[in-house]
Image (cartoon, rainbow, N blue to C red; front, side, top):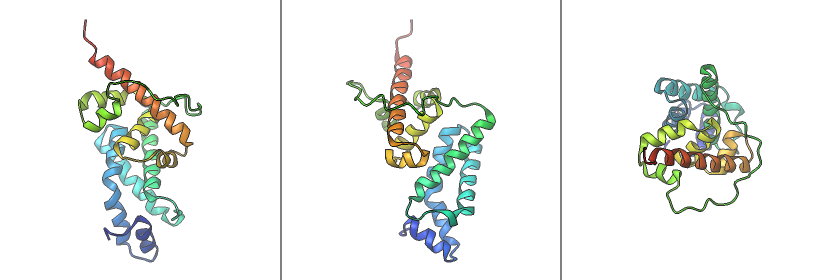
Length: 190
């Protein structure tokens, strides 16, 4: 079943092949776990969130629009579940800038590495982890989906149910915030 697309697996499942849903789980569970772990910061909660996302997908697979991308749908379910867990813990900083227009359209001119470049190179993981913890949840989500899961802005827009310009704006704000945090950590101590 590894060679089948998500849509083909869903069609097989609809025809009664229950192993087909296992194929979806096998294909996407590690990425969902990584994503929820980075959002929640707790492996037990990330495992629960991953399991809950697939249970919800399984329960509502008959409602899934096969013209859409299953990957973005399952990430959307996982993101919503993570938000629910964080709200229960009341330990998240949600941005009030969701509806702000795209104000960071210009490229950020700089010769230094951007935080996403550092992220991609896995340099100084502890600083990156702390930096990600310092930015608002919506920005963190966009960074994790774009850099960690290699989703396009269009896919992220679908996962988050937000306009693409909002997603791009949140990404740019996140890069600026990450850069400031990293620069503050690398600044000489008095």
